Amino acid sequence: MRRKHGFYDLSVTAASKSALVNVLTTLIDFGYRTVAINQIVEESAFEAQDKKKKRKADKDAPSPIPPPISLDDIPQEIKNSLKILHRVTVYFSTSDIAHKMVSSDNFKKYDIVAVIPTSKAALQHTCNALDVDIISIDISSKMPIRWNRKLYNMAAEKGMWFELPYALAVLDSNARRNLIEAGHLYHAFGKSKNILISSGAENPMQVRGPYDVINMSLLLGLSEEQAKSAITNAGKSVLLRAESRKRGKSVVFIERSVCKTEFKKDNDDEEMEESHIGPLCKKICVEGT
Image (cartoon, rainbow, N blue to C red; front, side, top):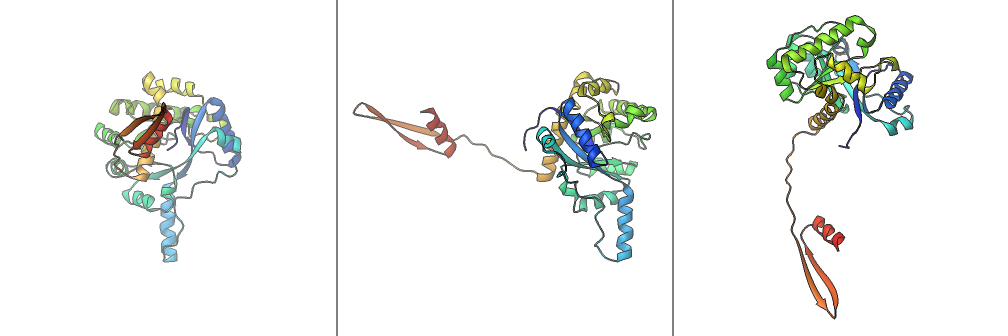
């Protein structure tokens, strides 16, 4: 995986290409360097697929998860300044929908996978059995489920991150209240461990600079160190977890190679005969001559 620097915003939900370009340009101006374009899938999409399957009596119904959007219309200068990733966020209330999500053909095409559990059963299934990168919330309404320490720590130990999107809170007082409440609940149940801050911006007016986000995070129960990490180190950790989820577990052995060098002198000229074990050792010895 290529190293990424700068600030992270792992949720941009612009509806049109022109709005997306404007948001990405604003993020570049603010110093963000890694961005994820988020596509939201409502629970109704899975219900519609079931109805089409019953009507057609076959399995050719379209996938409820759409393919990642094309980046062909994004100007090249934006692509050169940003690392752009694809993300999908799925609302679900039952384990059946979670199974359909994982079974979708387009599921593995996304770089980052996030879910929004809308019931206690969905939250328990996410923490116990689901393999996703981010657990997000919808701050347009109050959290429909209540966390507890056991579930919070279980999800954190599995490497999942808890997202607090701030875009709606910029303009709506009710959303702002819900965001602050969610932040303090995460602090009460898990001491704000594994918190990720993202915008979820649909237009440039909803984007805030990194240091404004850090100051805002202090109102959500985060410490100064956690607030800085929420838009820097948290983003790196999410991407590392996403890579491990896609590639699976592996074992790597590292061994030190041995280099032997023999010298012989002939007629005041120094000749070097090299016997090397491993190409890396040979390269090091040649460069050292």
